[in-house]
Length: 359
Image 1 (spheres, rainbow, N blue to C red):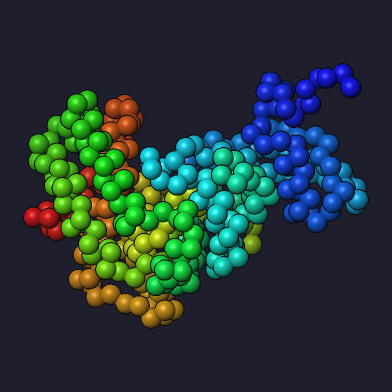
Image 2 (cartoon, helix red, strand yellow; image 1 turned 90 degrees about the horizontal axis):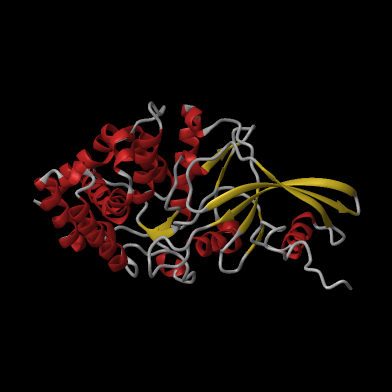
């Protein structure tokens, strides 16, 4: 033995977060071939992706097995830290979904080939979309909404059962104070920095944000009264792959949580409106389809007044939970480019909801 460092252990020659042994063991399990050995692997440029939490790379693996040589395309995913200080790591949640909940889901997910137990890295099958998310057709939206209602139907009212998975986020209960504290600190940064101008330049809006955090319990109270289900947490076309046969696979389960289904519907509608100029389904159509499917399935319905209240409170909560912090951390140049869309999708609707529901 020469005493040299094996190729997969040298930091300069092995640019991956996993070892060759991790990759080999994962491929053997997935392919059902214990003779598989990795002969080469190369980074691959990923052309089909939208912003996600963490570092994502493509990889082409060449291997030799009992049936001969083969290749396998993988996505290497390295979630970054936690979504909030004090919460379970985003990667731990995603690994938990693929390893524990995927068999129970009424939707297809990518194959998890290997992963760190803590979720520091994941190796997932690479999927080739038949259409980019921005080019989705109406039928793709309808199928995705039907699938979302199916997820919620499957786990409707099963919050106690889902408590068996401690890595799931619980934004309205156990994790509530973490999110409110982060929002309060973000507002302080907005005041100190004087950015973004759309908030700091408006005393009325800053007062509204202060009320939003001070009355956070009132914001979430109608949401807590709703039956809880399994939430994807970031369900929108950018996290769903449409395959050649029209079927779909859902990925990026890093924000998966327990809570009322309206939160997932809100994310689907607002993110579609934020990222795409003219999505084939507008917010009202998305909501109508979801409510119809859920009514036909589990039989749960809301009156127009009840849904309107829920939507306003979901809108306020998601803004408090995610967007205040995001706006405080975003460069002013980026916000200036998106000021019109920010006003249309978030600021305007949220401020109107605060006026209606919090006086």
